[in-house]
Image 1 (cartoon, rainbow, N blue to C red):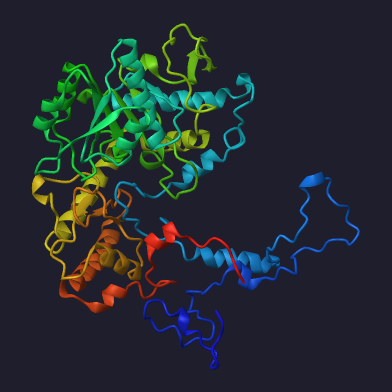
Image 2 (image 1 turned 180 degrees about the vertical axis):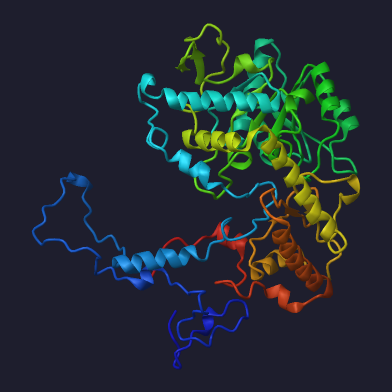
Length: 512
């Protein structure tokens, strides 16, 4: 990043915007930040050490060559990482329109509760008598999840969505084995989440695709025609990846059960139906719930995922260990396969301990603060907001399933109708200049140039109106062939990048 003779750094120009008029490359409060290695020196350190400091007793593990890291003062270090943080988008800065990710506001109350002593410092190896409060949280959250879904039991230990999918599929596999049946095929509709076929294959099943109908929903006739003695079940996402409710799910479940199979439902989109629809009433046998999407701490909100799996009475006996049980007024963790006579058919463990305690605490705080009526309003507002976005953009952007009726939690558009040479990517990059993280792009795969927008329930009408206005402006530019849009973003810290090349050939080593 060397200066030229006049002191300017034109190479810092971000995609055509004129920031060559400042010596630093900064544009007001949009601060240009060099790499850590360009700030500090490997010959210095931010801490003073005595010359006669005794060497650490590391034996053959002691470093024998310079480590090559730059030394910075405390203020340089703080400024560096603070400036970098300003280049990140966050839910605390604005609307996060990612579809299928439920990037909603993370209530600070949940964070406060999760940091209370006894929760934040709990250790999985503590004696059970010292963590009765933690077990009580797990047990009460489990009861809520079973009640909200209309299911029979819940496995709390899976760590996230795909982990939960695997849990449910392994329960199906164990149930089939107990029946002495060797069914090897799992049916996965086109409208299901992309992890579903990967999970089925990982568990040893053969995956067969079920097409979508013209409305973007599962083709019931095609599914029924494929059912047979080799089919273990179906993995279905509801609401599906097109943002639509699968109206035929009860008929699908009945058909699969009649053929001897089981129904796995991907619950990643549960935020759209919580308090309104109980999957158990629709014949679902297993469904994972992303606590980090439906009940607090969305993606990027700080903390790991958590994917408890609710199970029907048919699959509950095969649930994984460990699980919390209540004996009188005390709680106990069942950890061994043969420790509980009432649960001899468990397929085993999925994780070393009992799950993500921080996520359990956040989720229960979220549920209790909303109450049953509040959770119902969450899903209603999420659906209303998504339909508001859909109906305010469908005259300008192609909405392939707008005629299929109201969408659920997310609105789906395509790049059909844009000017020649313009695509979804140009719309996404233009949104960055407007101050938004782009929506989900090119997914689901069933729609060419897909743009999937999930506004969530936590955004106000004023916020949605501003986002809609920005997106309409960009869509008009794309339809009119504005050449400047092809090089967007212009106002971001960096110009348009080749994300594919960056992912496949990342430069991870500094060479000064």
